[in-house]
Length: 93
Image (cartoon, rainbow, N blue to C red):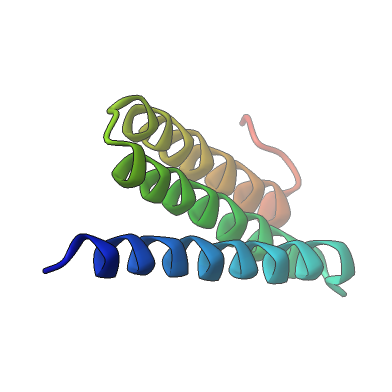
């Protein structure tokens, strides 16, 4: 595989992920219900994590991969807490 093809694919994937982040942000701002906003926030952190992974592949450093792992862990906990809050009205029982 040529290096130019790989660089073009990485650039195209970064642009597509950025567009997906823009769509998720739009849904976060315009969501008619709280459930839509939570789902948009979930999609936003997953897209942010993927964008960091693309940057990590492009630059070749492992710092981006560690940051993506932290974002994934914190995003999962935040989504679970928001879902519990929407269902029961409290997070800590």
